[in-house]
Amino acid sequence: MTGWQSASSIRVVGRWSVLRLTGELDIESVPVVEELLVRLLTLEKPVVVIDLREVTFFDCALLGVLCRTRAGVLAAGGRFAVLCTRPWALKIMRLADLLEAFGPVASLADLADLDALDSSPGRGSRA
Image 1 (tube, rainbow, N blue to C red):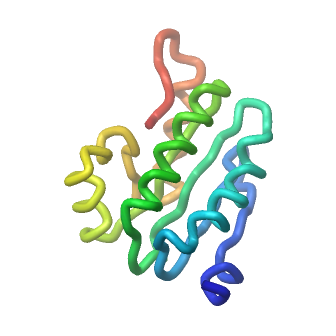
Image 2 (image 1 turned 180 degrees about the vertical axis):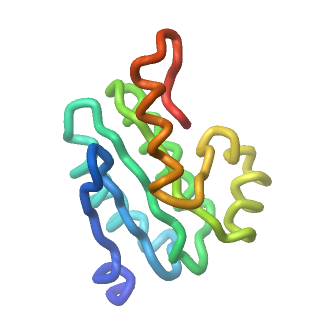
């Protein structure tokens, strides 16, 4: 997983912290992904985007990490979003009954309207 590890990156876009993942993600990659996510969860009211657009494979281990991350972000009063355009990945999310919870979008531009939700009373996070 060394090649994968070096290809991942965290960047800040506006108020969003974006974790871009690439390549094949399986149970062996979970500790590295979790380590990266811990950095994002230490922020007050974290605003986290998981970018899966360059992922070529993932299994249920990654879905577990994403579910735990989403729960941590929302518990901290933050926001969580997933970027994903690959039909096979969307199908896996749907089969795992996570498509609605993750609410994947195609690009960061699609997240711009989510900022309006922050000021709407009674509205929660996108995911």
